[in-house]
Image: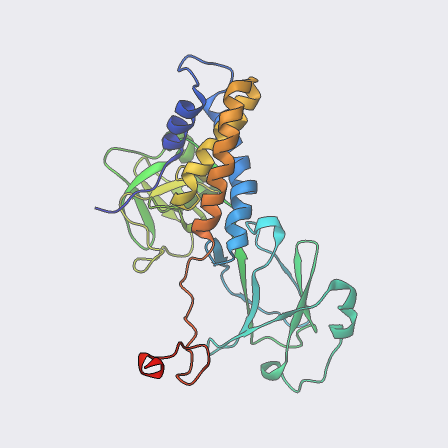
Length: 322
């Protein structure tokens, strides 16, 4: 049985227990608490994960074919702070070349560089202006594709009941589990419906974003493209379909949940003016923040340096002392 991640409902249960929120309390709704959690995930937690700089929330946009005499291409809408992780140029054989970043104040130096003899040997750079990637120099012919890597912004939290538990999928459809069904409001959207498919496992990774299509009560059929049927981004039973930009699985490393829980509880206690709870929760937040930073700081073990046998850094052997 696959490991499942924490859901938004799980977070609400944990936060209410930690902040001692009574069941009948109407000062904050569940939606209000999830909005507070969204703020925490997109700011404090995201900063910790970002600082680890280990590719944990990095995604790759579908390749965009370069157009002759067009230099500007839109930054993905879901990129955190409209920032770019890497800009790659890809040739017809799939070979990648990273594009160097140029400060916008110096972009004019590269703008009209025609020293390359053809597109295949042109060394592109890029700058950022507004929410646009500007290639330098301007491409003179088609033949290459733009591949953009970016840190994906966490989706907004909604209740599990606002998403659909999946039972199966194919290249063109995802089918609701027998115990669930697609909401009538989704069906009424017709061809204007756009969904994300979210993995149910820890960290709630998005399997695919912004999929247009239409649905009946039990089946969503995409209007273009195809779902992966194999590999790490293939939807399967137990995953969730959500409206685009929403999720019911916490989009953070599972190790961040204890920190997120006390952080949201502290904000709720602050909103309630519960000074007694604020003191204790504040200490918990500080301690768990340190623990989280240590846990996510290095996701991949670094190679150990190999010290030559003759190096003075190696300790003397027993026979030397003998």
